[in-house]
Length: 188
Image (tube, rainbow, N blue to C red; front, side, top):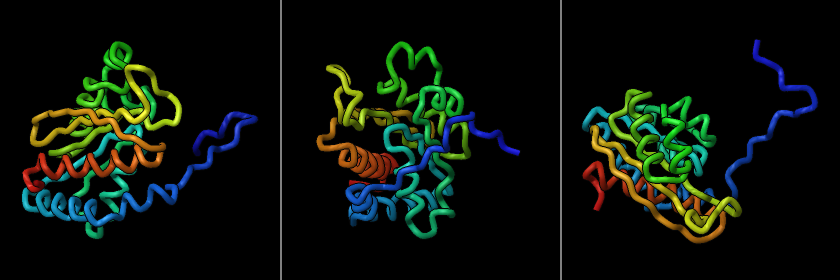
């Protein structure tokens, strides 16, 4: 029996993707990246894992939107809170305290943790400020850190996307998959 919600609190409703987010998950470039990624992973007998904060599972959703993904996709971690990053991925809480959740070191730790906590040989991790609030002078809205682990090699990079929350999240998904495709050696 699962625990009941505390008295006076109702269960949260989960938002669906907005109309502006959906096209980003179905555009031709994204689909082409996913087809190449899946072919490469299948050829190597590899599976990827995702570790997502600001995208809330949208990268995993894009992967599993491709028919046949059960043959090549391992799992996704939605680690929106700092506690989730620590509990699910093993990100050291001291790293988050020292650098903030939106940082290179946390993105790398997320990518490493996604591989360690799964059967994956590759991972992509994202942590950023999607907005509209939450930004600061050194971490503005649209800043996203990416972490990748491919066959034990960790890399990271940051991007700054413009637009509203939906645009930042959609751009993050597209960039994450395009870059993963490149790191797997299949992209241009």
